[in-house]
Image (cartoon, chains in turn cyan, green):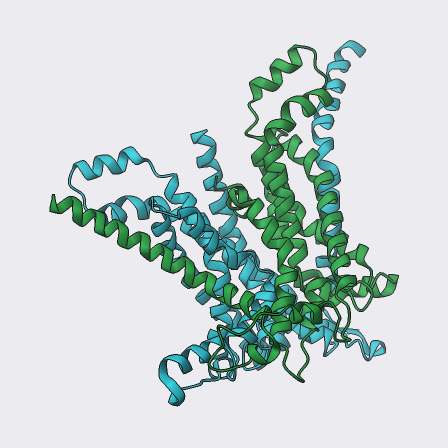
Length: 304
Length: 279
């Protein structure tokens, strides 16, 4: 009997030995990310203002209905969607154009690539400060300086951030995220099959036809990946909103609103409910993102 | 003949367009660099003064010459938080990635995707409990709390990246070494490490960048003592007087480590940022 048992035990032992290296990382991740979220979920059911801790009580879904009916919070949901969609789409289109330009041989390609990546490698707070003070400032910012230069003394000197707060925030984010999209799409372009394009050219296909029928379908997954990863990062953006407008002028997105409602208004319950809603929104995006990543992953696997 | 020439002209035109785009995207940074070397008076003119004389006053001011707060404590804090958290990430991610790629665990993709899903949980989802926890345990304004949080922030990306780098080590090479009688540590040191090392280095650089850049956790969970460089940068602007050259100098100094790390990791940047999905 022991003889029959031994292989089973050693098999189980070996199974554990292969899993053991995973455990520290897994346990660490579960503790640091899942536990706080559970706590957020629990707090979201309480009416709890940190300034009046004794008045804390269980309120079921009251926080959620308050979050969903509060005009400010509803506005911040809309702002988040607008900001994320506009930044992701614009930087994706610009990134595609730049990737197509860089996917060709020309003098100084390496230098141009480096110049284009630089915006992505600026600390986000520094980039936001650069746009706010160095570019947008109505009195001495570069934009109005250039207008002055071109148009002379009578040139228009708009106050960029006050006139168009959300596009102003979006523009600074597009500038930082276009290089990211370009890098992903460039990798996509370089993974095309050159023989296929050669064959299409032999058959008399023009540039546009090659792009429309070969390049674009091949890039679809890379476009999706760029859009989804970009969304995950930009939905969570805090730095640009915090620095450029401090959430004023209708630019407060959900992360900023959550930050403000507990850090400044001390409304713990409301902040948690808003946080849970952000998570639900992110989960919807994440489900799609995971599907795209896993399909790309399988493709890479089958090619290898 | 004319066809070839037309093609050459078009190619040159597209190359020129690429150069123009590159210069346009870099212009704000170039302008920021130039402004950082101008005096405050020259920095704040309209139209801009391109040819104004250069000075290091902006940098001197930033480093506390004008009686302002010194940036050094925050730079040290950022360095500690970024380096130590990156080290922790390596210690946790390397064995995990090894288990996932070289000795595949059953259902290994599920484990990988669990790691990825935690990355998609927004930071704000756990911010309040973490703040309450830190306040009640006296960890508020403590740099080691940031080290733990930055480790958790970067661990999923690191596991994914390293998994994809380790998967590039041919299995046959490892098996051959094992047949020759090499033990696991030897295999890791002599066979796996040399092939995977560039990837591991790139992973570390990317983790360093993300930690260095982080603002929300640092803003909420630190105060005076554990303040990091990005927090220092947001608090550094005063509403009085001219500060443009100083801001430009500060932004550049604080971005310098990220620019260096980013250019060093340039070739592996895409693979890392796309979680190994794009090579």
